[in-house]
Amino acid sequence: RGAVNRIWQHLFVRGLVGSGDDFGRNGQSPTHPELLDHLARRFLEGGGSTKSLVRQLVLSRTYRLSSQAAPAALAVDPDDDLLWRARPRRLDAESLRDAVLSVAGTLDPRPLRGSVVAQIGDTALPGRLVGERAGDRLDRRSLYLPVIRDAVPEVLDIFDAAEPSLVVAQRDETLVPSQSLFLMNSPFAQTQARALARRLLEAPVDDDAGRGSLAYRLALARDPRPREVDRALDFVRREAAAKDTLIGRPAGRVTAWSLFAQALFACAEFRYLP
Image 1 (cartoon, helix red, strand yellow):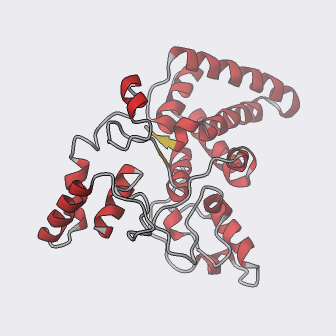
Image 2 (cartoon, rainbow, N blue to C red):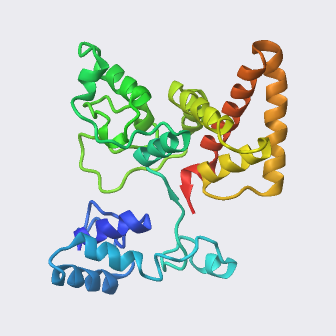
């Protein structure tokens, strides 16, 4: 039951037993005890195969439900205990960082060889600085970032990565101003936004409208609405005109598209799965 609950929690945001760390008297009661028992039996009959259980769950009608809220159902069950819709899921810290690198076109998918700490080159640095430098500089998946005790890289820590010294069944999910400020002001976010801007400017499209549409498809996996394209182009043109007088036309356009890229990275739609 504990294993099944963890797998369910990973796929459906919240477990059938909300207190994944505590199945005892002090924990929460399962919302669907018969379902939990049924899945536990199927899990054992399948030889404890996680892959088989995941396949069963993701092919279910419940997993494929829309996240759209029906007013009548919302009035009866606002917490979705009865599983009548999909719960919006925020990208975890590692997935968010990987998504930023992927959209910017800077993600290196190859496995990392050797020690990240050794590659940074100064093992005498405090662990906190090593973690921060790795988070800003490493272009590989977040899987390869060093997790040093009391020194989780800022890009992971600020988006609720699990405390490495504890057993954590379910991560906290906070919504604090420092997260938006990180996506606006951190060296990591600014570097990746500039990389996305160059990717858009070098793309084989005919005009800025095509670049704006490409940016939405890369970042949000959808085509923009006409109003969104108009607002994006108006923003880029105003920012480019302002920057041209200060730093010149080519650099001004890169800066304008970089600011637009940062806006996409910082928007809620980028951070949440529907």
